[in-house]
Image (cartoon, rainbow, N blue to C red):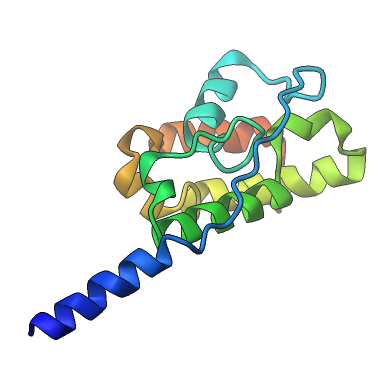
Length: 140
Protein backbone atom coordinates (compact mmCIF):
# COMPACT_ATOMS: atom_id res chain seq x y z
CA UNK A 1 0.00 0.00 0.00
CA UNK A 2 2.80 2.40 0.93
CA UNK A 3 4.56 1.61 -2.32
CA UNK A 4 1.42 2.37 -4.35
CA UNK A 5 0.92 5.68 -2.54
CA UNK A 6 4.59 6.53 -3.04
CA UNK A 7 4.34 5.82 -6.75
CA UNK A 8 1.18 7.95 -7.03
CA UNK A 9 2.87 10.84 -5.23
CA UNK A 10 5.93 10.50 -7.46
CA UNK A 11 3.77 10.49 -10.60
CA UNK A 12 1.82 13.54 -9.35
CA UNK A 13 5.05 15.44 -8.65
CA UNK A 14 6.47 14.46 -12.05
CA UNK A 15 3.28 15.70 -13.73
CA UNK A 16 3.95 19.17 -12.35
CA UNK A 17 7.00 19.45 -14.61
CA UNK A 18 4.84 19.10 -17.71
CA UNK A 19 3.61 22.66 -17.90
CA UNK A 20 1.70 23.92 -20.89
CA UNK A 21 2.31 27.55 -21.68
CA UNK A 22 -0.33 29.97 -20.49
CA UNK A 23 -1.01 32.53 -23.13
CA UNK A 24 -1.19 36.10 -21.96
CA UNK A 25 -3.01 38.11 -24.58
CA UNK A 26 -2.58 41.80 -25.17
CA UNK A 27 -5.60 43.85 -24.23
CA UNK A 28 -6.78 46.14 -27.01
CA UNK A 29 -10.06 47.98 -26.47
CA UNK A 30 -10.19 49.13 -30.10
CA UNK A 31 -11.01 45.62 -31.33
CA UNK A 32 -13.27 44.79 -28.38
CA UNK A 33 -16.86 43.74 -28.92
CA UNK A 34 -19.26 46.66 -28.78
CA UNK A 35 -22.59 45.51 -27.36
CA UNK A 36 -25.34 46.86 -25.11
CA UNK A 37 -24.17 46.97 -21.50
CA UNK A 38 -26.56 44.26 -20.28
CA UNK A 39 -25.38 41.86 -23.02
CA UNK A 40 -21.73 42.71 -22.40
CA UNK A 41 -22.15 41.96 -18.68
CA UNK A 42 -23.57 38.52 -19.46
CA UNK A 43 -20.81 37.73 -21.95
CA UNK A 44 -18.08 38.94 -19.60
CA UNK A 45 -19.27 36.83 -16.68
CA UNK A 46 -20.02 33.69 -18.71
CA UNK A 47 -17.68 33.77 -21.70
CA UNK A 48 -14.66 36.04 -21.36
CA UNK A 49 -12.48 33.68 -19.32
CA UNK A 50 -12.21 31.43 -22.37
CA UNK A 51 -13.26 33.66 -25.26
CA UNK A 52 -11.32 36.91 -24.87
CA UNK A 53 -7.91 38.39 -24.19
CA UNK A 54 -9.01 38.82 -20.58
CA UNK A 55 -8.44 35.24 -19.49
CA UNK A 56 -8.51 34.90 -15.74
CA UNK A 57 -6.51 31.77 -14.97
CA UNK A 58 -7.80 30.27 -11.71
CA UNK A 59 -5.46 28.96 -9.02
CA UNK A 60 -6.00 25.36 -10.08
CA UNK A 61 -4.63 26.15 -13.54
CA UNK A 62 -1.20 25.83 -11.91
CA UNK A 63 -1.71 22.21 -10.88
CA UNK A 64 -1.43 19.31 -13.33
CA UNK A 65 -3.53 17.69 -14.68
CA UNK A 66 -6.04 20.55 -14.25
CA UNK A 67 -3.59 22.98 -15.87
CA UNK A 68 -3.56 20.87 -19.02
CA UNK A 69 -7.34 20.96 -19.32
CA UNK A 70 -7.75 24.65 -18.47
CA UNK A 71 -5.02 25.86 -20.79
CA UNK A 72 -6.20 23.62 -23.62
CA UNK A 73 -9.79 24.85 -23.22
CA UNK A 74 -8.78 28.50 -23.17
CA UNK A 75 -6.58 28.11 -26.26
CA UNK A 76 -9.41 26.38 -28.12
CA UNK A 77 -11.93 28.92 -26.85
CA UNK A 78 -9.96 31.94 -28.02
CA UNK A 79 -9.27 30.27 -31.35
CA UNK A 80 -13.01 29.61 -31.87
CA UNK A 81 -14.21 33.03 -30.71
CA UNK A 82 -12.36 36.00 -29.26
CA UNK A 83 -14.58 38.86 -28.12
CA UNK A 84 -11.46 41.01 -27.70
CA UNK A 85 -10.80 40.67 -31.44
CA UNK A 86 -14.44 41.04 -32.53
CA UNK A 87 -13.89 44.14 -34.66
CA UNK A 88 -11.09 42.38 -36.55
CA UNK A 89 -13.53 39.76 -37.85
CA UNK A 90 -15.05 40.46 -41.26
CA UNK A 91 -18.80 40.49 -41.84
CA UNK A 92 -19.01 36.82 -42.84
CA UNK A 93 -16.94 35.71 -39.83
CA UNK A 94 -19.10 37.79 -37.47
CA UNK A 95 -22.29 36.28 -38.88
CA UNK A 96 -20.90 32.76 -38.46
CA UNK A 97 -19.83 33.51 -34.89
CA UNK A 98 -23.22 35.05 -34.06
CA UNK A 99 -24.89 31.86 -35.30
CA UNK A 100 -22.52 29.80 -33.18
CA UNK A 101 -23.30 31.98 -30.15
CA UNK A 102 -27.01 31.59 -30.82
CA UNK A 103 -26.70 27.80 -30.92
CA UNK A 104 -24.28 27.28 -28.06
CA UNK A 105 -25.50 29.81 -25.50
CA UNK A 106 -28.77 27.97 -25.09
CA UNK A 107 -27.37 24.69 -23.90
CA UNK A 108 -23.65 24.12 -24.36
CA UNK A 109 -22.02 27.26 -22.97
CA UNK A 110 -20.65 27.99 -20.56
CA UNK A 111 -19.39 24.46 -20.11
CA UNK A 112 -21.04 22.65 -17.20
CA UNK A 113 -17.63 21.72 -15.78
CA UNK A 114 -16.74 25.42 -15.76
CA UNK A 115 -19.92 26.56 -14.02
CA UNK A 116 -19.49 23.80 -11.46
CA UNK A 117 -16.40 25.62 -10.20
CA UNK A 118 -17.43 29.14 -11.26
CA UNK A 119 -21.01 29.41 -10.07
CA UNK A 120 -21.09 33.12 -10.90
CA UNK A 121 -20.57 32.30 -14.60
CA UNK A 122 -23.81 30.35 -14.91
CA UNK A 123 -26.46 32.30 -16.75
CA UNK A 124 -30.19 32.15 -16.38
CA UNK A 125 -32.67 31.09 -19.03
CA UNK A 126 -33.68 34.75 -19.38
CA UNK A 127 -30.06 35.84 -19.89
CA UNK A 128 -29.59 33.11 -22.48
CA UNK A 129 -32.65 34.36 -24.33
CA UNK A 130 -31.38 37.96 -24.16
CA UNK A 131 -28.08 36.91 -25.76
CA UNK A 132 -29.89 34.91 -28.43
CA UNK A 133 -32.05 37.92 -29.32
CA UNK A 134 -28.98 40.14 -29.40
CA UNK A 135 -27.32 37.91 -32.02
CA UNK A 136 -30.10 38.76 -34.45
CA UNK A 137 -30.16 35.19 -35.74
CA UNK A 138 -33.50 34.24 -37.23
CA UNK A 139 -34.66 30.66 -36.94
CA UNK A 140 -36.89 29.38 -39.75
